[in-house]
Image (cartoon, rainbow, N blue to C red; front, side):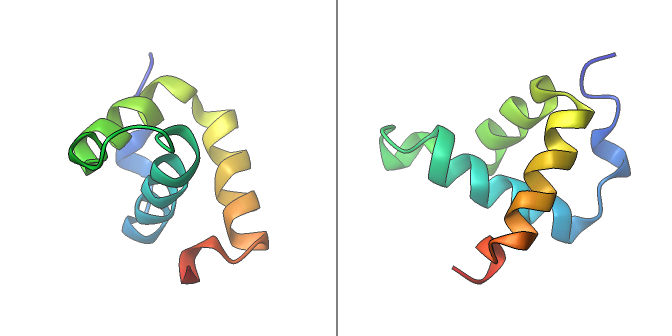
Length: 66
């Protein structure tokens, strides 16, 4: 069941989530590890409710424009 919701995300939502994951969860990782593929792997295990909360927080804090 994990990751079944990823195909439901709009491209803008997925880009926002990738940016959040790279800024927050991968903060102390080397740059070569901060890839879209690695971010997508983390997003897929977070779960739909957490992803929904991250999208809302990202939009509320205007993360997409950083």
